[in-house]
Amino acid sequence: MESTATVALDRSVQLKAFDETKTGVKGLVEAGIAEIPAIFRAPPATITTPKPPSSSQFTIPTIDLQGGTDSISRRNLVEKIGDAAERWGFFQVINHGIPLDVLDRMKEGVREFHEQDPEVRKGFYSRDPSNKLVYSSNFDLYSSPAANWRDSLGCYTAPDPPRPEDLPAACGEVMIEYSKEVMKVGKMLFELLSEALGLNTNHLKDMDCTNSLLLLGHYYPPCPQPDLTLGLTKHSDNSFLTVLLQDQVGGLQVLHDQYWVDVPPVPGALVINVGDLLQRHHHYRVFKFYRSKGFDDNKISFFLTNTMETTKIAALDRISELKAFDETKAGPPSSDLLHLTTIPTIDLEGRVFEDETKRKNTVDGVKDAAEKWGFFQVINHGVSLDLLERMKDGVRRFNEQAPEVKKQFYSRDFRREFVYTSNFDLYTSSAASWRDTFSCYMAPNPPKPQDLPAICRDVMLEYSKQALCLGEFLFELLSEALGLNPNHLKEIDCSKGLRMLCHYYPPCPEPDLTLGASKHSDSSFLTVLLPDQIEGLQVLREGYWFDVPPLITNDKFISSEHRVLANRATKARVSVACFFTTGIRPNPRIYGPIRELVSEDNPPKYREITVKEFALHRSAKGLDGTSDLLHFKI
Image (cartoon, rainbow, N blue to C red):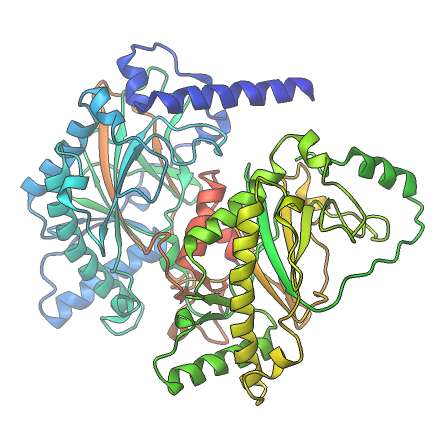
């Protein structure tokens, strides 16, 4: 146990030291290392795989996009695209319309950026995804089992292109020019893919598949021990479609029929691969349970109620063990999380409606969600994003401070103004949950500031005021949904009392053996829940625990797993990947199997999900060698 902890600590120190150089893998090469650091050493099983038999069956298709002007040649082109997307999920295209000069300048721009003075590169190094442009090494550095021998430069170039001054001088101009060209190719490919699916030409474009473009410029420096690491771990892309420009060094492989097949560089060609979001599409919204590595989770629940909770303590056979745990006053030592994605999502339009029609539509949406689910998510609710983030951060900081400080607040006396505890029903439940909680009644009689922890006091008071305002607005909509006057539920004091529960779910070493919160319903009129990015809630409906959602082609097209080998050459390898995706930007739209592709014979294979939820899941999971789609399978 101790040796494992020591190894983990050493790895953590090494990761931090590498990250703080801000010069990436290229910096290691510039330092003249002869052996790769331990953090880059991948498990042998992930590197060594049998080579495929040499036959045309194991050759990535290359498709000529020229022509297609008459109906016959167009149909032939569509059939080739459809066949490649179904069988491989990968293909190369030539005569795509992007000038060779632009392709060469794009590759050279990426190379120039990564090979410039380290001090210049450091100015762009960041792990903040909200930056216009991010240069870093391994986005999942702190969560993946092994780091990859790769540095990356990333930027969203559509729908809101960055200002030229926000881009590096070494490659900014060509990034803008190249991304415009890729958008044109992407639109053409989505038309062909739509027709290959038997849909109208603009179907995928009308679903906004071409609206957003993320450009990633990967740089793979020469590796002194290429047999011990990878340039990019096995993964599939969390995009609709990826357009990849690779140089002549090679190294990309695609997993096909259990063999890793090389994708040889073809001069002037682009590599196209179907992303996870195009493998699935629309059905209906539910919630997912998945494992997250190395992240904590906190959820802030508000119970709008006018009664205090009472707890009956029963004697249990496990009383001694429970008492010993309770007396530590520390909660679980370190939670796999239950994953609630969205069910219905309702736009509250900032709580101000332009006309009665919009208000009525919102009331109808609330009514339908409350009747069918009893759960729904709201957007544009009037609570600022900054406040939401500060509230979550306050909960996290309280739970992650020194144990001796937290112990001062630990209690099972629920008459206290503020109570920090683990499992309010510890002595009565059949099994304890992997969760710590602090709670406080914020209305109608708010606590004195001195009774609250200094570390989260101000934000608790501020956020609870906003939650009360939101609660009153929701009770108005619910009253109207019931056919009552808007103030009916408020007038019977439904919005008078507010209890705040802040749950903290630490990572759990055996998440398959416990829960963060067992099955229950809330003893309140209404609950307003603020989850963080690591979701974990599930909702029981009609006898089923619903997870999260589905996406576009319902497995008609496949999103092939692929990887990049560590570079054996003496010259650095460059690739530029453009992901057609809405990324993690706010977007309430739900994706699941396209309705026209679903039937009794071909039922939906995936649940619905928003792109943001999918991206957040991907970010938490990292490139661990498993497909992200498995988490959303029905």
